[in-house]
Length: 297
Image 1 (cartoon, one colour):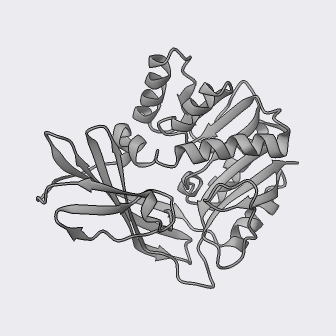
Image 2: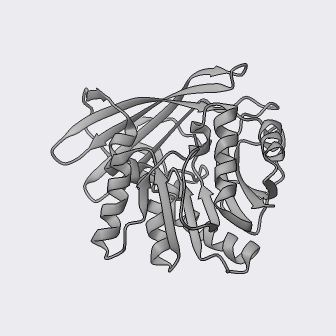
C-alpha cells in the first residue's frame, strides 16, 4: 500500500482525504462531500469492479506515465517502442502510453479488468491489446523494450517459485538491455511499517473513499494480509465493497537477493514514489516505497 497516510476525520459532514500517492500537502488534498449512513456491504473482489478500481488507482496515473516516458528517454535514449505490462488491470497506463504513440500490450488474470481495458481502447478507436493470462506463465509473440509493474502487483506472486518463474518469463520476452520497472512496498527493518492508509478519488458524480489496513504480518512465511474497502458514492446510491488481499513481503535485502538469483536481471537504478527521474534514491533498511529499474542482462 502507499505509505503516505492521513486518517479520515469527520467535520461538518466532510472528509478531508489525502490524494493518492502524495505527501501531506493540503494543496493536493481533496474534499469529498458524503452523507453519514450505514452502507450496504458486499464482500467481493475489488478486481471484479473495474470501474471503481480504475478510479481508485488512477489518481497517480499522470505521474506514472510521465515517469515511464522519462525512463525511456533517460535509460534507452527514447528507443523503446514495444511496451508491456504484466498484471495490467484496467489498462489505465496502457491506454495513456498508446495515446503517446507506443505499441503496448498487457496481460491480467481478471477477465473483467481485461474487458474494461479493451473496451476503453475500442471507444477511442484503438486496437485492444490486453489479454487474460498468468504473469508467471505466459507467452507473447513480440519481445518488449520496456515493461512496468508499478503498484505492488508483483507481490501477488505469493511464493518464491512464482516470483522466480515470473522473472524468468519476463526475461524470455525481453530484448537484451530492456528495462523492467517494478514498484512495490518493502518491509522496513529499521522502522515500523505503516499499517493503514486512506485516500479519496472522484470523477464526475462518482466518488470512492478507500481504506486499506494490515490484517496480519507473517515474516516467517513472508506473507501479509490486508483488508481493503471501497465506499462508493453516486447521486443515487451508496454502498461498500470489502475485500482481503494476500501479498508476499520483501525487505530491501530479500528483493535484492531475488534479483541476483534470477541471473537474467540486474538493478540499474532505484526511485521512490515521487516519480522524479532526476532524483534516484538509495535503498536501505528504512526504505518502503521503491521503484526498481531492472535491466535485462
